[in-house]
Length: 472
Image (tube, rainbow, N blue to C red; front, side):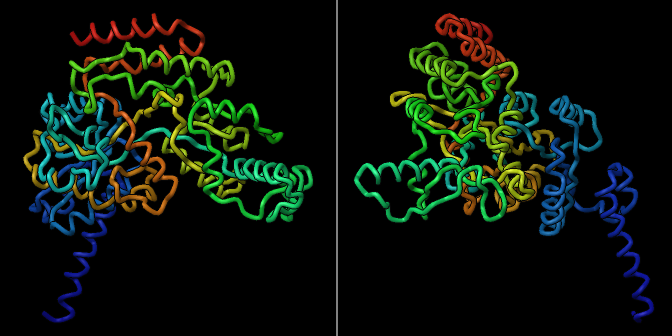
């Protein structure tokens, strides 16, 4: 074929490719898309549903790269999160295009599996193992001893602290220690500006008069309280900068931030959250943990009806707090605030202090996962794409979406994300049992009443009886 005859053919192909890209961005219906370029319809095609718009660019990119590598089509479908599983069920039974795979929270997996909307995954002996995911993630996607989804990303809570304040405090303690040892001029110390003098950039000064030339990360870490008793001792002795309003503050009205206190001893469904014979809510250890929680209100008075996770994080960004409890989504906010100069501090993430030296804490976690629809006629391809998303695309997930991958290989170079992963490994997943779907609302009410001074024994027994009655 001559060059003159080739050019029109090339132009046709380029126009069709441009049309494909336009369709992906314009929100054109699937039917209109297929009418536009029918020659592509012969490719094997799967439809991938999700409800979080922040994932759109990431999923579109993964769909394109996977499609090119397998010579198939993956069509992402952004769907409202209102009645999400019901919409998947309706499309599976009555729609023209069945959702072959989709993102779902782990606590909805029992409902999805029993409705035929989630099936036992394929190739689970290769990807879904403790070599690639923590046991927490695998338990989250397990139902009745079957892996019925692929772990994708997670949310949990950890301890957030102002590293700038702790560095200054550590320096003060080292200086006092050196002076107590008779060393009038402690080696490595120099004068620093007072808080009202300003620094070389014209900004307000740091918060102590003397600071070592270098305080090591190990020295700072050693000063972080390991349990609530140590935290109270720290608060008693801490000479707070003028800007600080509280040593510790957290959203006491939100179960996601409170569950840590009872997570090791309050059992609802076992490790996989699917065993209705494994319910242990009313026990001595849980009561003791709630007593620790209640006693904190005497020292850190927090109005449960006015404090929200958003207001607490804003206080931290404003430099008003030394410590707080935060979830994984806080890191993007901190990074953005540092970048635009509204948060002129350093910060760190670590495990939440234990309730006491004898009692252990355990955070709550939610794992978003990828399920393969039992109604799909392309299960092999749907499993392959699910495995690709969760096992190959983790390197860019946080950067592009702010979501924290459940894959152990992800974010190895990010110290704060790895701290959240440590907390996730130790966390307890939301249970899957449909009969306990209101458990978290009821537990949140219990925490609120305990915080306000309610009788722990009677409140805990009431909750235990209610949940057991729902399961029977």
